[in-house]
Amino acid sequence: MLAARGATVAMAARRTDRLETLGAEIAESGGTALPVELDVSDGEAAETAITRVVEELGRLDVLVNNAGVMLLGPMLEAPVEEWQQMVEVNLLGLMYMTKAAVPHLLKAAAGDRGVADVVNISSVAGRIARRNSGVYNATKFGVGAFSESLRQEVTGRHVRVSLVEPGAVATELQSHNRPEVKEQIEKRFVDMEILQAEDIAETIEFVVTRPSHVAVNEVLVRPTEQEQ
Ligand SMILES: NC(=O)c1ccc[n+]([C@@H]2O[C@H](COP(=O)([O-])OP(=O)(O)OC[C@H]3O[C@@H](n4cnc5c(N)ncnc54)[C@H](OP(=O)(O)O)[C@@H]3O)[C@@H](O)[C@H]2O)c1
Image (tube, rainbow, N blue to C red; front, side, top):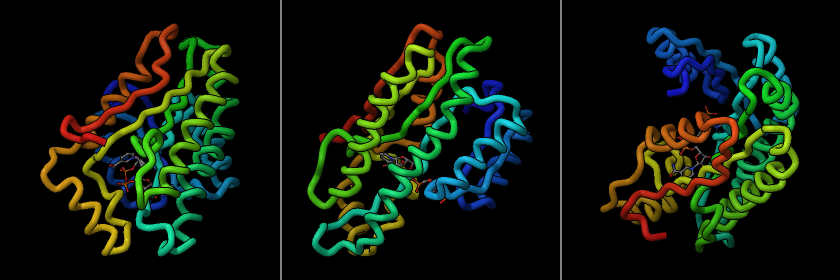
């Protein structure tokens, strides 16, 4: 969506085949995209990825911290490795990427655009804790706290920090759960028209295209029929 508006975009994730396909789609529509293989839970790799993006593309105006995993189920039965993965990706990964990016964002904000952006993708789960979601809740509540603290640190230098909190979106997120947990999650949204990835992309687009004196700090976007 941002590439279609003329932004040069870098996309980072572990599965390079997906990134290459998206990069090719963007290139075919006349845009410019740089696929970057990255596991955000590796702090050194996060730093290297940001350095590479700035070297190859010349500057960094917007960081969207979207990478996340949601592994649910009762705490007493949970494999601890699932908790570690959520903390390492949802929380530490986001922090590593932000630390690496902020010096470049500060530089960009002092330039012609007059502003730069960190957009952190949290969740309704970052505002409301639910049974069987404790560690996911903890990571997303953590994203909220980190974002607000960072916001106070850098907003005076025109780096806007925004929190986007989606409700249920049709993606692969729940597919990584154990079968018995997946069944429970699917039941919850079976009769509901949930959000599409484009709905959240539009929200991010809105946030980063405001005039430089407007900072949209927090956006909670639920499917209309989602009560909690
Ligand atoms: N779907 C929802 O209902 C919902 C609701 C609220 C919030 N969210 C949040 O939205 C964000 C995106 O999730 P999604 O729904 O789009 O889920 P998804 O379809 O499973 O996508 C997750 C994305 O994160 C990347 N990722 C996962 N682990 C990574 C790692 N270690 N390093 C780098 N990239 C990694 C994945 O790419 P690779 O696997 O190739 O690395 C993929 O691009 C997450 O932060 C999630 O918590 C989703």
